Image (cartoon, rainbow, N blue to C red; front, side, top):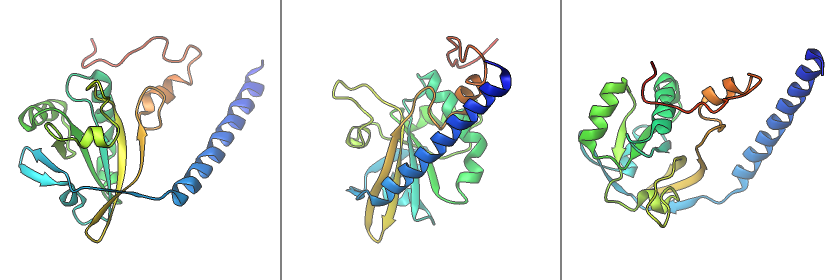
Amino acid sequence: MKYDAGAKRMAAYRDEIAAIRKKMRAALAETEAQEVEDYAFETANGPMHLSELFGEHKDLLVVHNMGAACPACTMWADGYNGVHHHIVTRTAFVVSSPDAPAAQKKFAEGRGWKFPMISHQGTTFAADMGYRSPEGKWRPGISAFKGEGKKILRVSDTELGPGDDFCSVWHMFDLLPEGAAGWRPKFQYP
């Protein structure tokens, strides 16, 4: 297929994706929110409850990160660091992981991360949100919450993984003829 024909086909696929996203937003608007408890977490600055993470915002995004042992979660978090200052003008944002607060702080400082982190170690938060398997394995994702008076409502969530909408690296590789070609994220590159 000639370049121009291929480019037109790709543009048509992008239009289809945009139409699906519009349908997803409509489905979200029709979905009943799930009330959740006011979970208690540990942070490098002491204990915090889910309700406190909203700060001055009515909405909150919580990233379910698998912790410092996961190079993929680290790459995603490196990306959040670049957009965090934009995100917080609209909603509260925090990254959660099973790592202890001291370990989170050390790892975050080493990566230059500026966003807040919470430890869900010893809580049922990740499992209750669907981001820990019955076998105890962590899973990455994002949960969106809304504060309504004293209630905390989970309004949506999504899993994270290669090709998702939250890590642009995969989309850039999709522009290449062989895609990612077996590439995997690492903590450091030569």
